[in-house]
Length: 420
Image 1: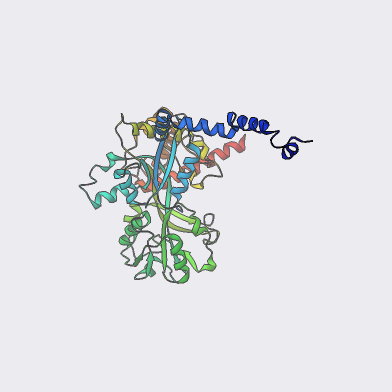
Image 2: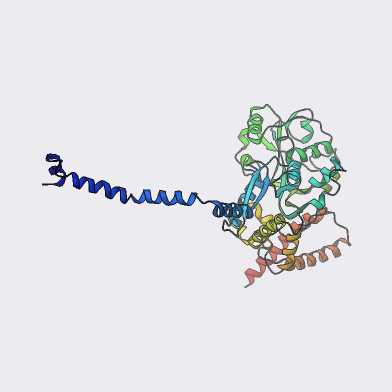
């Protein structure tokens, strides 16, 4: 006979047994109840552990303001976060922050609390000084660059009835969001060409819809190619890229633009659906930089950003990976930016690590140290100088020549490898 069956038949007989069970349950609560009690006991004295955790979380965090999610800068910052992040108490944590882009990113680094770094464009300091010479008189001492990241190509996508920039005169053209880097650079380009247009300020997705529908004649995006949304388009959508060169615009003087921006091109490899194989679309590009506020050297923020620089620079080889953005092939940590001051922790790292890689690319310069790159480029420049009669180079010409230098160096390394 079971105990419960017997109890049901004669409950008075088994009252002592049930009393024992109740007392045992009270005396020995379940394991889950014990854990809750232990947790409650810990929360009664949170002081030291809570404050310590709070301090650790803030001590390792640095923020980077970027533009929209579709911007190459956002993808780059995500790549940096994925490679650099170390959430240990003595690590470093990168927090991407969505901003507006353009001149606003510079202002956010300069004025906004809790914004430590930002991705901005090379022409921003010059444009801000033109905008307000008094306010931004010494901006290069307050906002300094850590490294150049990539080139942002100037994309103008137009309907098929638009054959050149001149055809856009008086037409509706989207300049991306107001105060974005696209709007800032597009304003410079169209003012230089003296081509007035009806400007709109839709985001990229909305602009693409309106362009295909015929509501606007063209849209502009300044970003590192390939731009994901544009790469999905095809000729059947009735759109194409406009060329920005002297051949396409014979009645315009482009020297001013070419002095400010880099020569660039959109290729079939970048946009196979929009650029026919064997052809390219000439354009210009701006250089995107990672910048920081120039905190005093004895400040906590200076030390925190210096820790980030150490973690980022020392892992540059890890960005040569198919899972990272292809624009990492353009990154050379040692690249100099005329008109900008190098952030001291970055300059110190480059000086102290002359024999370590400074590039993530795989085009023949990967793995070269700063000293090796400098030596190779100096030799290349000596050859060029003798061939050109010592002609002085503009920053734009020097950048174009550096591309040729890397191609030459890559070919040299390939020849050496095949001879082994």
